[in-house]
Amino acid sequence: MASINDRVSVANLKRIGVLTGGGDCPGLNAVIRAVVKDAINHGIEVIGIEDGFLGLIEDRMRPLKVEDVSNILTIGGTILGSNNKTNPQKYPVGRNDDGSIKYKDLTEVCLTHLNVRKIEALVVIGGDGTMSAAKPIADGGVNCVGVPKTIDNDLYGTDITFGFQTAVSIATEALDRVHTTAASHHRVMVVELMGRNAGWLTLNAGVAAGADIILIPEIEFDLDVICNSCLERSQRGKRFTIIAASEGAKPKGGAQIVERVDEMSPDPIRLGGIAKWLSDEIEKRTEIESRYVVLGHVQRGGTPVAGDRVLATQFGHHAMELLKMGMKNRLVVMRGRELGDVEITAAADKQRLVPHDHELIAAARSVYTCFGDR
Image (tube, rainbow, N blue to C red; front, top):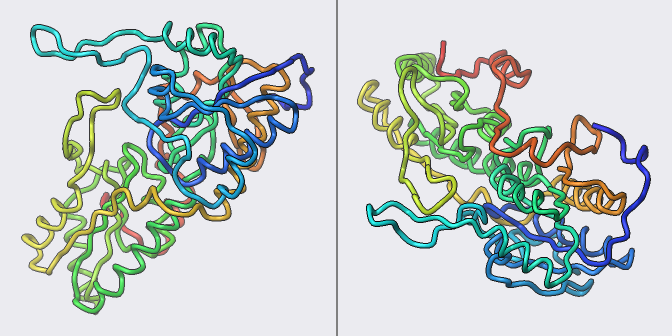
């Protein structure tokens, strides 16, 4: 990860595009704002591409001026719209005779639209799926600079993604609120959080809220251990238990619970249902009244916290620095407290998972938090 100060400026950009791909999250508008204002300040035109790569395929784009991005720093979501089902290289166009989905590679369509509009480079804001979708565009000769976004914080190559801190804050507040009703009714309360195959969101929110049991995908749990923990707490006079469960958590030797399969999506598996299953099993085995809550898309919405506003602004500025320096196909990353960049393909189709020896897991265990494994 080289320092941007070591590079020589060779770029002479006149027009760039910016798009937001994948699921929405707090901080997207802050990145757009930083990119547009920085670019215009250096005489570079910015074209906003609507609804991610779908807008690139359908040629839905519009110029972005300073007035378009003023006062959007605190607004969640994205003024450009997003789409988490579109990959230009594998775009669904119907069904084959056997009923399977028929795909078509529309990379050339995207490149044509970029060429006609004289867009020389793209700022691509998204997660691992978005970076994967950007690869054929980059291979086609358009410089793509990625900005890492996901509330799951699972993007490979960076220690943190914007949107994560806000999601942790929202999830923590939800766990705090559940705490009071659990104590009042002497219940086990299971709260299901997002995160896919990574437990960063559940781990951080669970620790922040003082959850009694934290279940993450990286550590398979034993249901007997969980039930015994609930019973032991009850016997010690702690007549309630708070469980923070990642949607991707699974029992030892078992599988993740899949809510549904969206075959039209590049990422078809939709996890969900672990909280209900746990709640039912715990009540059946322990006879302790149990309830469950699924936070769902609440974790994605609302105003970004200060940390995400700052991080998103830093990421947007650094993306523009890379473009102005003539760097090709890079992904902005934060390692420790240092901004840097890696190859944009470094994050494609990869996930950054929680290591078993992570210091936050050790800290949680030291205050008697159960992870369902022992």
